[in-house]
Length: 87
Image (cartoon, rainbow, N blue to C red; front, side):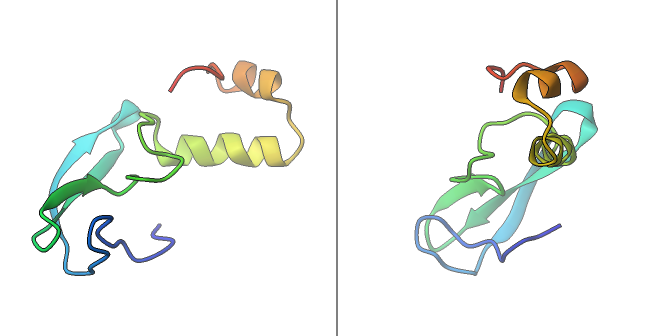
């Protein structure tokens, strides 16, 4: 699910292309993009609060939804078998 069009964080250009992919936990694939104008490679979560997280976006979405529905942080950690300090 793409919430917004991906742009180069360096030059803000739209002329980017998918360079490669990598796998996070549970087999979800993420894309690494390249920008020839900005001369950089970046992931789809670059410069976002999700940058550096190794959990699948679907997992993160479920946890955030549970927190929004009123589940406390410690209960969410127990329910989703995670840690509030782990990435």
